[in-house]
Length: 308
Image: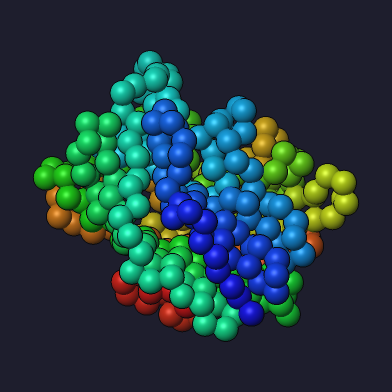
């Protein structure tokens, strides 16, 4: 059975058969420089292997798995410095934050958990720019030694003006299209293997498109492997998405809808995006990944923010 616990009105944790799968921190305490926003950490496999990293010294704004956008109408909801064309990275007074406004529901039914959350994106000038409805579900696949984290967001522009959403690549830096549902893996995952429907590969897949992407890494100590599989959703405007992926410096994956093209979100308009992430014990093959994605419920592609 899945179980959920709350911690001092700042986070919720999900467990399965007594083992914690993840903690979702919805009221983070990091400084403004890091663009405080909700995140998942620690994230573990069904066997308890840690597959996320929090505040690494090289990029303290990396937080496990988090919905992080770095170029939102000139504001930074990613954390740290901002890339500007012909000037490089600059620390500007533009680090925004995501404010948790409340839960519509936090429920557990058998092997599945649902978190329905309301948030507001706030600029450093305390202006509300985006009203977000976020739906998170988690379900267990013990037959596959895996569990699935589903993330859906509805972002409504309430700023009073149009907002352009992009990335450092749209600002002129090649191969830096990070902005989206970003995962930072443990340091031992450096040198891991990337999987696509064409088989195993590596960092050369930066900026490539595909319906899904897997990452296999090894754990220090045990030497065992774990796999994270990210699936884009056919209902997303950019399907199949471009991918931001690294293996040599550190292990990370981000389905990046704003990698190379700016998305213009008109005032009053809503953008809906959905993703599924499988967290699996062992080294999955490309075939294993394809089978998991093919088995996704049809509800995950329905209108609205519904996920199965």
